[in-house]
Amino acid sequence: MTDIAARNENHAVVTDEITLRYDYALGQVAGKFMQGLKEGKLLATHCSKSGLTYLPPRAFCERTFEPCDSWVQTGAEGVIEASTVVVRGLEGKRKAPMAIAFVRIDGVDSAIANYVDGIDLSDVQAAMQKMAPGTRVKVVFAPDRQGRITDFTFELLA
Image 1: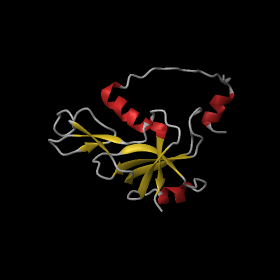
Image 2: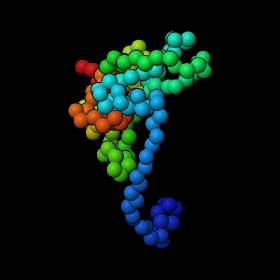
Image 3: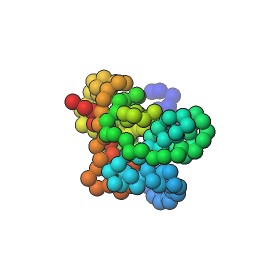
Image 4: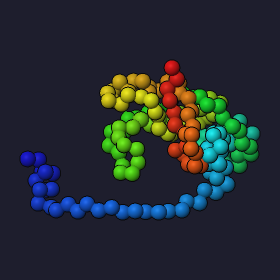
C-alpha cells in the first residue's frame, strides 16, 4: 500500500455540494466582446499606433500602452498555437475528456482559448496529433447564444 493510500485509509471523506452564484462586472471592453458573441460575431480591438489586433480584446495595447482605438470583426478561421486534452474535469462543466486550444484567428495578433469539438478523444495521443500547433480550425457559434465565452467553439478544418 502506498503512503498516500495508507494516510487516506484512516480519514473519513465528506462529500457535499456548494452552489455559488456570482455577478461579474464586464466593463466596456468585455461587455462589447460578449455582446458580439451573442450576435454571432468575434470582435477584436485594434491599436492604430502599433498596428496590433487583440482577441480577446484589450482596452490598452501591450506594446504602446496606449488605448486600443478601434474595433474589428474578425474572420472565422485560424491556426492552433497550443492545445491540450483535459482528462479530468470539473463537476458542472463539460464532461472529460475535453479538447482545448489557443487559436490565433487570421488577422489577429494574439490567441484566444476555447473548446475544440468534433474530435474523437478516445485516443488522447491521436487527438493531440490532430490538434498540433499549425492546425487550421474554424469558429462555430452555438445556435442559442447568451453572451458568454461558451457561445463559440472551434472545429478542425477538413
